[in-house]
Length: 451
Image (cartoon, rainbow, N blue to C red):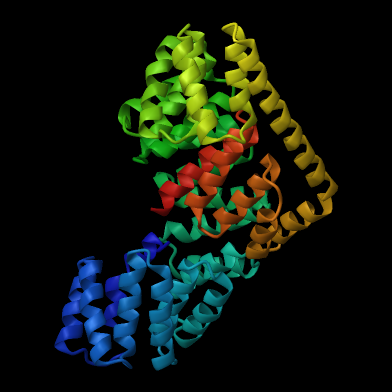
């Protein structure tokens, strides 16, 4: 993922890159890059590098154009060439570091970013990204680097946010909160800082404190469905169901094409027993996301509660077809069939549920027997060995705990969309697990922040 702060400095970078005097073709390509016509810039730059294969500036520009289009692997190749042809150019090293970071190779990115900072100590952007990259791997050097960036750019709120995020990430909650309090003392109306603090407080289970910060973020201009859904969840887990329902309603009305918003409103109404009002929301969510077994089960439950048993059966059967290994799908269908007097069919589904449930218990038991390995995975995560932790978590059978670990590792690597999908699988396994709901709501906001 290309950081927003990086996008904002692309023009500055291409104006000071390695080649001393660009030819007309390169200048035209850079104008396209400056206009954020990344596809056009890519096409033009490929012609330039074909004609001048050793032009470091052109390779660097092409890396940026590719990176902006999320073509990280190709960007790495071009960034490597830029650094190879201009090893003493800080811009080339910086660009190569950016591509490596975006490709999920933070340790290699650190190497290049450190070189960029050493070659041009007064440059602020490489220092800022180096701090972020240290943070992504849990490297304690992030603290000193963020503080240098803050000292050099006191008016850049993102540096202060990064420092707080790092402390939270490594479990130094009090230091993270203090860093964010200091940031808000300087930027009291900054919606991004307020939203980040709200998310962190919710993850600390300080639900109403988190809700207050999220409300302040809204007041000062923060927008987006993820923020509203996190706010609604904060109120729900904080025991203020009326406020939660109000926020979920606003989220669904303002984001009618969001399956998440419609689903969360439907679930809130179902929890309140208002199945007649929940049904159209869940139906809309299913239409928007027809391949979610989890949604279909919630929809089926609302149909069943309203006496529409044939429709409920159809929804449950679709859920079972989509996720045949999900125990609660078979349980919902089997219970409904028994209720309808179709005992043999119902017993078959309930037997399938028991088999899957027992298999799940066995997997949990196996996971319990590997407590040391699971603990090692978490230790690796806390030590900044994120890729090792991800590989270890991914090797375990899927359970709520191992999926939570996998999601945390993916999030640390800025692979937020994958983390979100992992958490959705965890919720399918345990729809009432508060830890999963909390992390899911928070990760949605991270996905939105990274866009």
